[in-house]
Image (cartoon, rainbow, N blue to C red):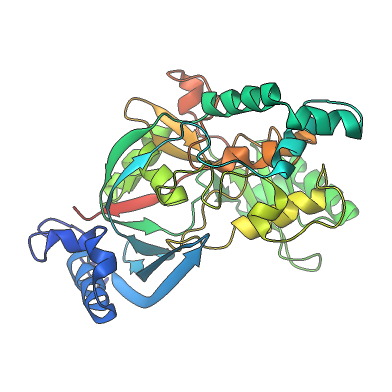
Amino acid sequence: MAPAIASTSTEGLSELMDKTKLSKPTYAALSRDEQVKLLRQIAEHTGTTLIETQEFSRFGRSTFTGIFRHPRSLDSEFVFVPGAEVNLGWDGFTEEPREEMWLDFARDNGAGTDEEIRAAAASPEFRTKITELLRTHTTAMEHCTIAPMLVERAARVPCWREATAKEVANDPEIQELIAEAEKMGVVSSELDETVLITRDDKSAPWRIELFVELYYDELQEAAESDGFSLLTLREWEYLAGGGCRTLAPWSESLDFESITGIRPDGENYPSSAFLSTVEETLIKPNFFGLEIAYNPYRYELVSDGIDVARKGGDGGTGYCGDAGVAWSFFPVTPYFVDYTHEKGSEENNFVTSYDTYRRILRLA
């Protein structure tokens, strides 16, 4: 007989403990022993397993939390994120960004010679124009109540399934893709939304996956059938930025040094090495222990209350278009608004190979 799966209902959880302890600022004010006790209570009442406790720190913020395993998703880790009353959205710079960011934008704007680039970057008119453009592509300021929750640490890629040996043997497109990848010496290759092949290194065997057509509604139904929810747009913004009042959780500046803490050797534009270093910096767990908002190629699917929305990227429009750090990584900032999908369309509801999603368990 298969072992019973514990209930994952959070019904009554807040009644079994002081509800305010699940949210800021009360949670942060608890002693370490009280926090650990609370995390154990959360595990008990959600049917999850508390694997360990850990403090995560990034960009001047930190959270002591627990890492949990869920019985219906043993391949994933979840962390506890305290609830909060918080203002989300962006309405302009609260401090002057670094000069390097303005130079980056000026280069992307085609300002010309080095002297012309410096002149454009220093121009009040140019800075006003860029500021308004950024404001156009960010969400408006709003006071939000964020529920305490268990959050999946890494986003999931929904649209691929493992191919069977028979499918691999009988599909000439797969064979051709593998042969070409072997010839090029790469570790991954994709036939657009058809076949994906990956391997850990050049001597490892290939993993072959086939694309599965899927709609957001189906993802939502599957998550709910396992007792989870999917993120709302504002919840995602909070998880990515922690309620930052700046354009990004590190500061108002979108330049290489502001993000990585590394002083660049030479010009910060446009270099694949610079862009890769930024991504390697951002992929590290954030102040909630989440891998989130680091790859501009990837979207996270969320709900804006009416329709599916996409956060955390723009499909790599700037990144693959030879833009500098500022335009390439603006799409991973918390309040960036995707402008490449038409809301309300059937196509917008269709899940693509660039889309990911993240499940949560709200606790109050």
